[in-house]
Length: 426
Image 1 (tube, rainbow, N blue to C red):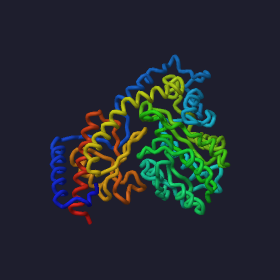
Image 2: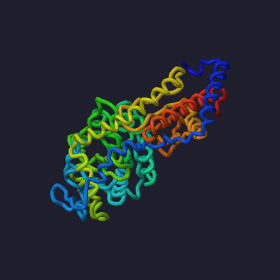
Image 3: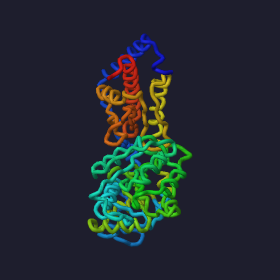
Image 4: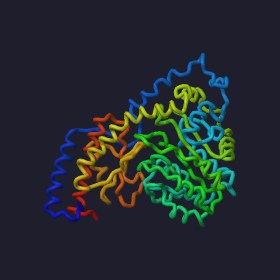
């Protein structure tokens, strides 16, 4: 049903009902927050055995290294061996570092700015840099690139990944286009997993910049909600076959797997890229937190240990995603007021509301006690030209709070939609 097909009387009646529902929710004095994709306390509890996995009397790694001391810049081999097949990166091409993959992305881009990549004609600093940003996309990627002074270029996305015709036309003749962000599995926020076909296109496309970089962020590669799930793509192997072995930089972390902010981050690439990253890192680091890496290696034990752990996460998260879908289906579906994703993994649901109403929905929700991510956060510079996309993060609050928040958001969408057709905004 189209809103434009409703009579003025029907619109007025539905707006009245929606407003009454909204005011009922607003009167409850709620204080709910579904702004960021954080793990819940119950998810964090799953990894509490980490806290006792290493003691001072037993702090030696598998090769006898005393993890309490300096050294080991590339990270513990046993932990790299565990995550190698999970990320489809050879262990000797995977570095285990500190707690944040975002920090590693910043470091990689800063190294490129200051020194250039191994395949760069010159450092990136001092010349314009344009970064391709699939949208809707990951706000932290956009914020990092913006902070470094890059120009952000939106790229359309479909069910297979970024629009490769658009990408190819931009990179072919413009040497200032230095890279593209890719979240290959369960992307933030729409949950799309890039196809192998698109991956091959990315690795084979002709780029005017010889150091064109694919920032391959496996932020949600292991966060599956159901089976079957996407398997990791061997992006390094595909890049090598295409004759561009240095093009991808692979990132991942355990931040939403074990304890957020106290996990382990990884960076991988070709042997040349890994040596380049390690060499520049060595100038400012003597070694990562190997005790924490040993905790993780002992806690998981094997790749299957990680997979088993992630199934426990899925058991906790699935009811929350199902609740949002059920409430949106009930409250918004019959009147076709919005569309939303039903992701097979990741941390978000993307809600598409009538164009021009997303900011108003977020404002209404805030006034009713439900904090949402700002409208536009899914786009470069925080600007969604259609003002139509809202990111929903149902992971952290308890189930009953997720349900209450979803009901408020649905009421806000109804109010905003009917207000827009009753009295269009200028």
